[in-house]
Image 1: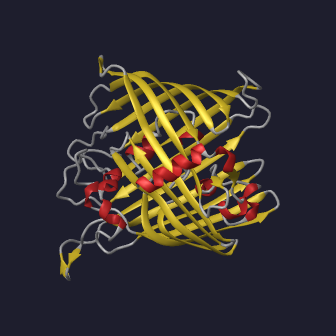
Image 2: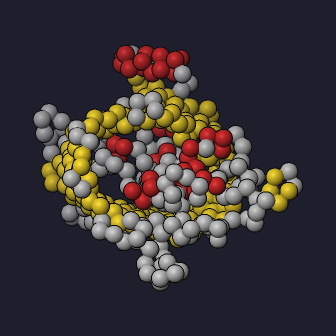
Image 3: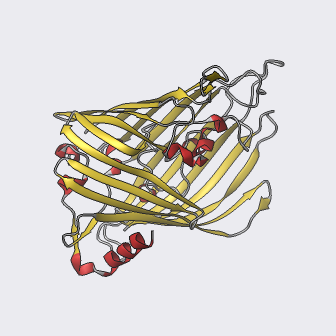
Length: 408
C-alpha cells in the first residue's frame, strides 16, 4: 500500500511527465465506444494519466462533504465527511489485453475495498472475456457510480439500501457490443461468488441485500458453492437514449455441508430496468432506475422480513448556464432534482390483511456548479419520509448537504 501511495504522489508532482494514455488501450474494447457510450463503458470512461513510458496509468476521484440534517426535531449538528478517496490503476498490457483496478477508501480508512480488478481479453467486438473482481451489472448505478458524475451528495437509497451499491465479486464472464448506424446493442453475463444468509440475518432486522458486502470471504470462496448469475442487455440510440434490462440471481443459503443436507435451496432474484436520455433543445438529462427483489424467506422468519421489495429513483438535471465563468472556460451551472422510493417489504400481513408499510419517499432538489466536466460543487436539500413496518406516522428527515467531488 505504501508503494502504491508513493507512486501516486510521484505522479502528482511530476506534472511535466504527464501524458494521456493511449485511449485504444484503456477504453472499452471496441474502438467505436468513443462514438456511443453505455453505462457498461463507465469502468473505462475515466480520466487516466501516464508518466513518461511507465506501463501503468493512474487516476481516481475524491469526495468531501458537509451536512446538517435533522430527524423529527433531533440533529447531530454540523458534520464534515471525507466520504471517498478512490484510486484507479490501469495497464494496456497489449492491444487486446487490458487490466484495470479500483481501490476505494471510505470515511477516511474506515473501509478499504477493492471494487474492481479484472483482466479483459478482446477476441471480437461481440466476444470479450473478463476475469477477476468484476462489478455485477445490476441496474445502471452499480457500474456507473463515480461521485464526480452525479449532482447529488448521497448515492440513491434504492442502490445502497435495497440493492448493494458497488456490489462486486470474483468471477468470470463475457461481454460485447454491436454497432449499427445510430444504434448500439450490448450484453454482459457473469458467473461469480454471491450472497450469503446475512441478507435475512442482520442488524437491520429486515431483508437487506447490502449486508452481504461485509463478507470479505466472498473474494476467496463461495459461501455455498452455488454461483451467482448476473446478466444485462442494453441498447442505445443517439437520439433516443439508453435502455438497460438486467437480472441477478442465485442460491443464497448454505443448503449442505460436507454432503449433509442442511436446508432446501433458497433463491434470490433481482430484476432491474434503467433508462437515460437527453431532451433535445433543452438539454435536460433524465436518468431512471427501478428494481424488483424477490427472496425465498424461510417460513420460520416473521413477516418483518420481506419476500418482495421494489424501489428506484429518477434524476432530472437541467443546465441553466453554459459559458465561461470565474475563469473556467467550460463552466456549467445545473438545477436538478432526485425523486426516490423504496419499499423493503411489499405485501400484506397474513393475520390482518393490512398493508406492510416498511417504505421511504425522498425528494432532493439540488444546485451544482461544474467548473470542468470532471469536477462538481453541489448543494442539496434532502427531505425523507420513512414509514415503519406498522404504518405509524412517517419519521421525517430534512437538511442541507454540500459537497465537492473531482477526478484527478
